[in-house]
Image (cartoon, rainbow, N blue to C red; front, side, top):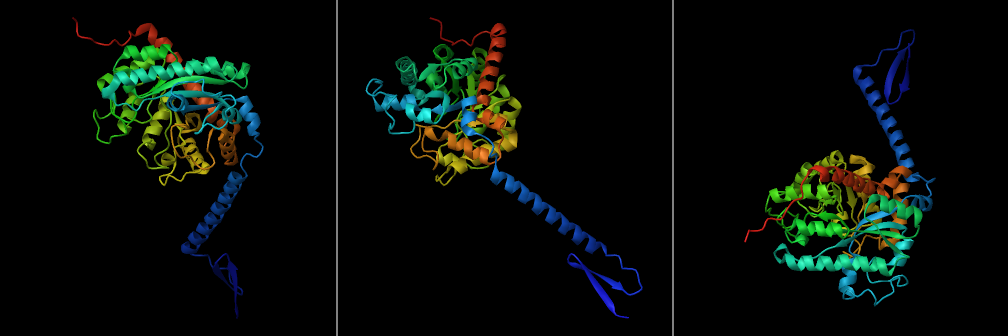
Length: 411
């Protein structure tokens, strides 16, 4: 009697004439199951890749940006104007000057569909020269206010989340202007000055810049001073909660970030930082801190600075989008936004050369399959939610918590 063979997948099952087929051994079954799983996985990956490549082609980015404000939480335009033009805002007509030397001007802001900006006031003075830092900060706050007064058809002041929403709805085309300070060396070791800044419109404060200070450790220098927040720093974070000023932990050490997230009674922000897992620079946030940020209800605003996007420094729009997508997948798209650092850096990512390219960024994210509601969150709803929650916490704390007072030696 001859034998006939029938082949199933890549295993052979012998069939002898007049006999029942032999059952395959367990190794053959395991092999076939593994092959089936591989084929299924490959098919699923192809489907996902196809979806990602196809993206959300039905999303009209232009319509999306008319419906929801794009908010950038970090640009250095006031300091650029102060340095470039000697604090004189009358040398140029910024409504028609469309090629200022760096990344921001009014025509390009309109082209980029920007709904609100947080004008960053910063000084590079170390904490030992606090009086000069306070002087320079007041000058920049005044400069922002003068710009709003000089260009009322382009800029409009905003102090609350509700102000931004109202301005966007009722004054389309105008850009809400809010303010922040970049480092507590700018308060001259005084809670009184912090409150004075708040009364002038400052709505967030970065705990450190490029130096340690009385309150917290910076990411640079690497050797810590306090090991995170100092006791004075914890008191000041709570005072920021009490008055309604957002706590910004960009530029701080990872230990400062963890301490701030444990201490703050309100959501915390990174005004301009990226994901450490994607780009292993110490200015970026590690995963455990990002998970703490999610539990806190805060938001990380991803920055364009090339060295924080890609360690090679040769960053692209796609590289930047990788950070947003990574953070969105890790902790959710309700905890990520945009904090460019335009006018505060020399080089820029290819494809994000200036503020006019925000629509290109939103299109890239849509092409990756990120939905319309998530895109609106990233564009601005997240930071407005945080600001609103900070305001709510302040309204409660101000009723039962005394202001932090500066101690002076009795005379």
